[in-house]
Length: 269
Length: 272
Image (cartoon, rainbow over all chains, first blue to last red; front, side):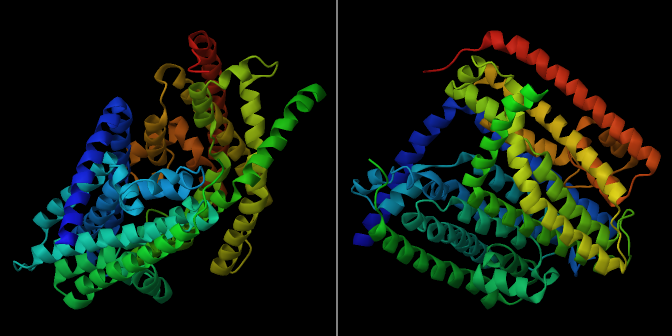
């Protein structure tokens, strides 16, 4: 089983890299703690903001406070996982290609894409995951949600493929740096659109709604799967859509990445 | 006076060149910020549609849109990179080059940042503000722009910037002791996002909290100028707020001078 071996090898490599990275982090403990605190403050402010809004209205286009909290919490899971495992793609877009540092990945006997992604293990993102889970637990206690056993595997599938949507978008945009030397600001711009995914799509006008569903499908990373879990509506579209969107984007990502590698010329000496 | 400008204006020019070099980055940030404003616009639209009322804590829909965009624009003018630049220079040792030159330490930062700001002002701020005014005209059916209010707003913005600058310089000096500022910088911006009233308008908070927030120096960073622009303060209140802003600028100017004279004795240039 060649593929099986490849995957096992990837996990083993990841463990080694993660251990290295954790050692590096212990050197900058204070940075880690302050980073985690600032993330927590941001989230508390955002949630206070939601609470203030819901002080004035009972529901937002039919969605209650706790339903919105659930969607918000759910949105942090794929985002946090991508942040945890694939944060280094930002650096590819910002510096690695421009400074000519990408050469080192090409000399290694592992796929460059795999090496780049596993090299950094971004512990800051644990903040996102913890807050996400806390919000989901909190909202579950106030909601009477329909539940069947297969909701749990479906939720896991949605989180994983939601993460794949994030990662693939970053791969596509980071690859552009192979031609332009730098694409970090482009990643930043498109990535920023994930803000749209935290609220029900009903609040947006038609073009925005279609944009975040079919063009840059951030709505599938949070709202659609979360709305299925909340109300059991449109399972095929909500969960299936997340899987399809993740797969299509990942295929495009691999294609662009390999085209980019072929076009890559090292910078400077 | 002429000598003063002759000394420092080249820094402004360098600042303009620096900003031009990074314009792609800046434009990407800008588009990201505008997108955030649109998300919030849709959220507020849904809030007003769902509540069935025309005002929320004294803000109507048009007010909210103006608040979002003007807060964002004000941020472009009042943000200061001082802490990052000072911190970076302490880390990489370039601070030594500034200390041995016969120029004032903070003036060089101030003037080079003014270069960036002048570019932001003409390329982003003015066109966007015209857009906001056109939106208000469409919403209310008559021109709401008053040159007097705008002048008071700009006066407030200038003080906001000076406050932001000196506060950040104070913060940057912490690098003399901490060596590594990155985490603290992120933490600082999260706290300021809240304390400056740029995310949640103070008007939405309980009265006691609201008055505390309005007296703190950080209101100066965003809330005070934005409320002046929106005409939410009466004449007497504007005078009082501007006076308060001025006092905070002076206070932080003095603190930065004090820290500088202490910190300079602690300087250890790393590496080199």
